[in-house]
Every structure is written in C-alpha cells, then in structure tokens.
Length: 250
Ligand SMILES: NC(=O)c1ccc[n+]([C@@H]2O[C@H](COP(=O)([O-])OP(=O)(O)OC[C@H]3O[C@@H](n4cnc5c(N)ncnc54)[C@H](O)[C@@H]3O)[C@@H](O)[C@H]2O)c1
Image 1 (spheres, rainbow, N blue to C red):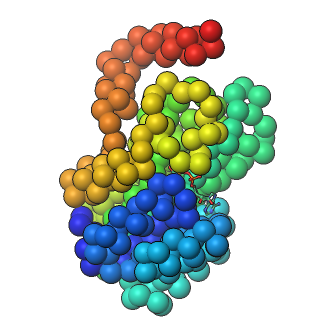
Image 2 (cartoon, rainbow, N blue to C red):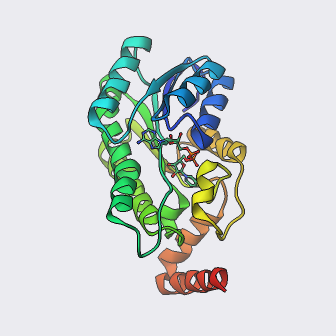
C-alpha cells in the first residue's frame, strides 16, 4: 500500500515512532493525517507541523476510539490506513504490580483490538484498507527487561495475526516489530541487548514494509533471525537468552 492520497489515522502520534510516521506520511503525500494521542497538546503540535488534524484519544476507551473513527469519517470521508501505534513501555520484572499488568494489557493489547472493532468494518464496507499494529521484537522473542511489556507485545502480535486470518486479505494487517528505538520510551527499558535504532530508520522500514505488504515489518534482521532460531530449537534459543541476561547482570 502506498501512502500518497491516503486518509490515515496514527495513534500515539504525539511522540517517537508515531510522530516520525506522521512526518514521513506528510512528505509522501498522504491526503489527510489524523494525529491521535492521549496527549492533546503533543498531537496538535504534530498535526500542525504535518498539516493534519490533532485529536485527543484514549486507545483503551471504546467510546473515545469510536469517536476518533466517526469524527475522522465525518471530517475527511473515510479511513484508508489505521496505525495502532500507541503503547506504553513502563514495567518491571517478576515484581510487576497488578496495576502495571493492567495498563500494559489495556494499552498494548486491547488498544489495537478496540481500534480494529471500530475501523475494520468501515474498511470492509469500502472494500479494503490497511491496519497496522506497532508491536515489538519483544513480542516475537520475549524481550527480557520487562515482564508485563514482553507478554503484552506477544498479545499485540496475536491481535494482528487473528485479524489477518479473519479479515485478510481484503484488509492488509501488519505488525511492526522493532528492537529498541531511540524514543522517550527507550528509557523505560534501561540497559538492553541491542543498540537503539533511530526513528528515521524505523520509519524507512515501515514505508518499505507497507509497500511490500508483509505481515511482519522488522527494521533489522535480528528479530526474525531469532524467531527462526526459536522455531528450530526452542531450548537452544532459551539458553542463548539466559546467557545474555546473565551477561547484562554481571
Ligand atoms: N521505543 C522502543 O524501544 C520501542 C521498541 C519496539 C516497539 N515500540 C512500540 O512503538 C510504539 C510507539 O512507542 P514510542 O517508542 O514511539 O514511545 P513514545 O513514548 O515516544 O510514544 C508513545 C505515545 O503513545 C501515547 N499513548 C500512551 N498511552 C496512550 C493511550 N492510552 N491512548 C492514546 N495514546 C497513548 C503517548 O502519549 C505517546 O505519545 C509503542 O507501541 C511501543 O511499544 C517501541
């Protein structure tokens, strides 16, 4: 799917990867970009910079997401592409609290599921569309730093896979799986195994992935190589990660 001429909604568009996508989509000739975020000031600033519309939206709240989709259709006619990108990274290890688990699961798993509930039927009525979830390499291979984050991102990939099976191929469903990216969220992960990618590099891979239409969009080779290694030898994969985690602790 190319970007030129498309009506696009990006959640979590006020910062980091979402902001980078909005900026690039404007350069690539998107017809309308709706920048949605819990942070209205941030969303409005990005919207102003890209000539789009800024909207406050809480992706965990059904009514808020319903309003985002209906207001966008009222404003610009229809939605071609939806990027369920909003996410939270905060988390902990085995001591992660119920509140942390609840927030991770609500934002990172239910957020994309609620968005799909509202926008996919609209796209199907129009004969097609693109629904993209910013998941994470942590959801393919279990990022070791945050327990609740890694599990929630497995859920995000599950949401994408279920949608692709049940609503593809008329709806193109894709999951973006970066390793660590240099955004405000990166500070939540402390010391990690990989060098941070730039937002620009991640957005390059997203644009290429949209054109290719592949289910997984990965900005570098590591996540899929590790995923394949896991499929071939799950115990070996676990042993390798156990050693790396021990290395980070020592
Ligand atoms: N930064 C990384 O290392 C990394 C790696 C892989 C995947 N990701 C994923 O990329 C996505 C974007 O993260 P980022 O790194 O740009 O982080 P970020 O913190 O810069 O941006 C996240 C945005 O989501 C918004 N948001 C949070 N909760 C929301 C809610 N309930 N409703 C609406 N908006 C909400 C925040 O206000 C913020 O603007 C996330 O899904 C994240 O999990 C990030």
